[in-house]
Image 1 (cartoon, rainbow, N blue to C red):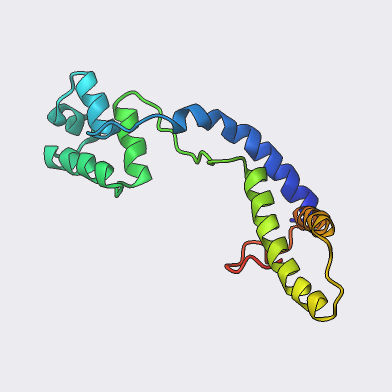
Image 2 (image 1 turned 60 degrees about the horizontal axis):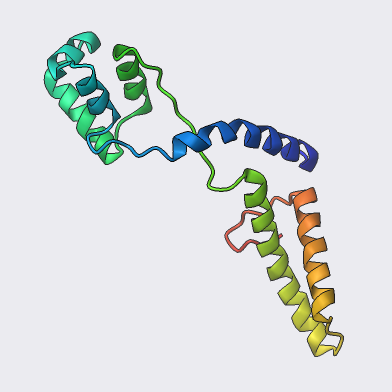
Length: 158
C-alpha cells in the first residue's frame, strides 16, 4: 500500500474506532462479563451449559479463563449467542492512529537529526534552535507523508 492509501485507511479507521472510546472506559466486572450477564439474567451455570451443549464444569472454566484473559474469541461468540447477546471485539486506541503515527515519525526524525546534527557540529555548521525545530517539523511531516517501511522498526529509524 502506498503512503496515500495508508493515510486514507488510517483516517477511515480512526473515524470507525472513535465509536469504541466510550466502551474503552467501561470497567470489566470483577466476575467477568459472562458471569455478570448470566447472574443478572438469573441463569445458572447448568442452564448456560445446556444452551451451549457442554457440561457445567466447562462453564466454570470459561468464566475462569475469561477473568484470566485466556478465553478464545470463538468461545465468547458462542457464549454471547447463548446469552442472547452480541459479542463485540475491537481495539480502542489511546490516541488516534494519526497521532500515534505522527509521534513515531517525530521520534524517527529526532534520531535521524541527531546523527546529522553531530556531523554538522563536527564541521562547525550547526543549526540554530529555531532551524532545528523547523527541520524536525519538516522531516516529521515528510516521514508521515512517505510512510517508510522502517518507521516502526525497533530503533524507530526512518
